[in-house]
Length: 296
Image 1 (tube, rainbow, N blue to C red):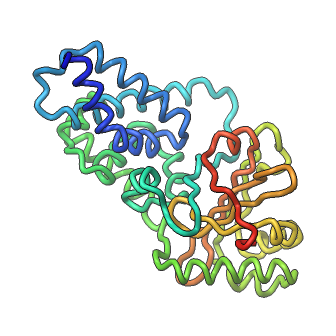
Image 2 (image 1 turned 135 degrees about the vertical axis):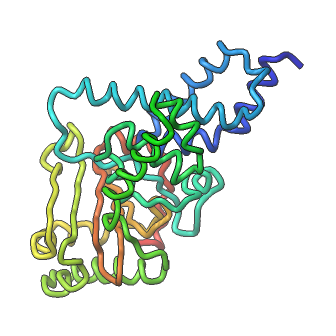
């Protein structure tokens, strides 16, 4: 077996973990795949025969590629994006497939992915690698070209910024109850019932991309979000139960196909965040489950 063939096989063995790292770093499946392709090219240009821990080495190479992509992404944005919902992992309500399980092994919901977008690139890398993938700070230091102490400080700073912003209910039954109550109240147009199932500080983020700019919005507060009841009512007959990043969500399908993916974060029986991806171009790129008539 040639060295390149051996490297290719070992790279494929690591691919699920590497893609999970890249997804956490970038929030985009297409960019994650681009990062893995670049990591593979870099591995091919390197003598890996002396690498004792190839998996760890490939993880840091992938992270370095992602860091460069994040920095480049920030530089090329001439105007700030008001709202951006990361690519969701959408699975049938019956459960995750093995590939999705690998992506979501640490049960990170879409709400956390949204908050990760607010971190500086180096903060995000330090937090993702250490807190999600248990990479030592000594290895992270080499990626960001800082000391281990600085890497530790970056992760700690990210942790503080995330603290309290991503608390979520992990019991699927309680998630389902809150989301079902939300749609039932929406169907009735019951403003008071909607307010009751929403956390007072709930945040709704909707990302329609450039194709649907009218949908791009961020709403805050239970009464403001509940005020959109007429919009939600339209979605009720089109909503199919799915899992979004492992949590209860809805796939909205109209006569033309998938219209939106809705993710719900639930804490203490109330919905604290609703994230909606309605960008048709990005929806077309997602691996979406086929809706079943009985899930309506």
